[in-house]
Length: 458
Image (cartoon, rainbow, N blue to C red; front, side, top):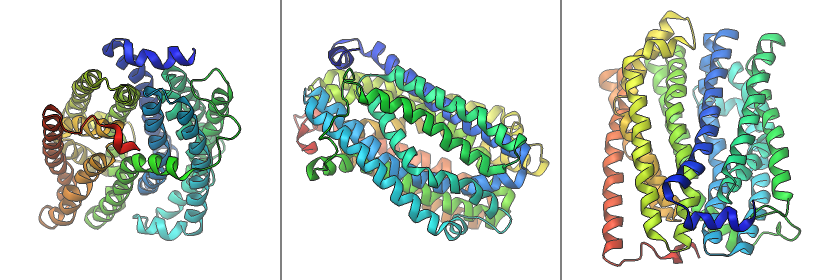
């Protein structure tokens, strides 16, 4: 596909078809990744034991922290690339790609090495007990050693979608996950490497994906491609990239903090098994949340490109379609959690007490889950426009303004149920904030305000 065909159709083709073309590959990638996470938990639960699920749950804050670093570069760079392509600034888009390669490797290496130096204290801070620490450490060590590979893979995947190749990005992601799914049970059941085997499988699958991603961007046929001279960092480009990327960075950073508080609260109220129950609940709900994240990834090139081209009618239409689809997906998650919790939880373990804790937690956590889709899409909408301050506030409001106080207060009155109930209460409050900000932004635009002005990305 030529550069013109890959990008110009974002401004001319029907929005409905484009949204499907860009979102379905991204959704498929995210769903497959989420299904892999579920499968790995099933492998670990049945192949290593119930306590290993607790160890895996303890690593969730670490994974969110790792993703925060990855997304700071990946989302910021891909969003800026889309905006520049829409404005016909292909040279600047290529500069952004070169900067993303350097920053991904640099940030991934620094974070991985720093984390390995203090791994055990960090895991204890994140909720690991003497019994679960070994399982968590075994999983995180290979993942952290491979963090530069993971950072670059995530970044190039986002650039591939942003520059007009969503299907190719999906196929590479599917291949990577397929490798991961094949290697994980081999390492756990055959070689008996336990949770370390799951971590090694993850890194190996990223290496395979990176090989194909790098080959794509080395080709001159790509809409944006790597070439000599693009790897010298320029302060203005770094500033613009990181400014936009701060929204997903703070979102994942706050998620890390929240999961730490959740793990500590769960351990105080129910011990290691309660943390394991949250691990199961989190895996199940993330299947639906990751679907919405895939949808927003598909929306991002459409919104960014048309915003750069000043086609605000197409920007609004993309957002409305995305909002409807996201609400439908999270509503499906709500009904599944309320009516089939025992079946879903039973996939992970046959431990009776763990099943009982997980079923109760799933029902309570998902009590307002149908609202989550609109929150994610609205935050992604402002992020795709480069409105970093609004996107950051929306990303942080649910976690820090509503969920954190709930986690600190409700368990004092309702015990373990108070931990679970904190999540739906935060969902309701954050949805009200998102709707209010969206209304104010729309009113600003209708009054001729600066909402469609591109000056904030300069």
